[in-house]
Length: 142
Image (tube, rainbow, N blue to C red; front, side, top):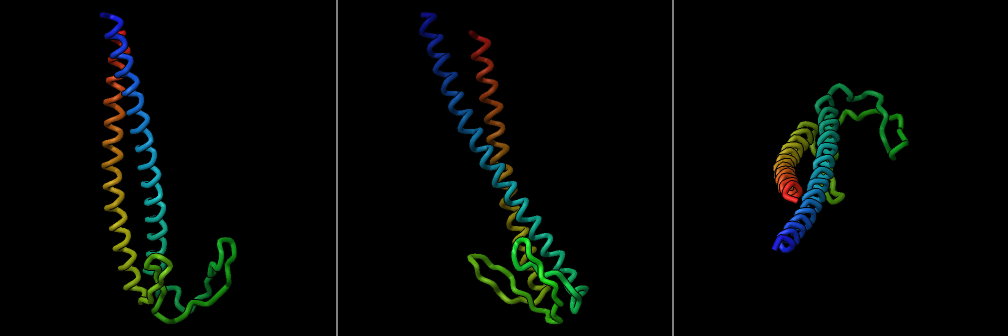
């Protein structure tokens, strides 16, 4: 009878290990998504800062990136219009204030998405702690 109980404990332990792997994978995946959103929000904040200081750079000499490592010395136009990416490779012409508001709305949306991912990650973390406690309990019984 004792052998049968230890097999049950062993099966339970193996099931817990499997669940632990699933939750660890989910935790890692959510962490990568959260880090990607943080990077994106940081880029958006930098763009918003530039737009908010738009009046200061009008008619000034600026370095214009044309590739990842190539900058062009240029002069900022006196125009208030800028091109804003709206996704899927499409650009929309807006004045710098509207563009800044558009970026702010994207930042808010991404922040909400990140909060949801953080809640999911916390649930996965809680599940991992619960699984670890159950595994420890089984090991102590042996």
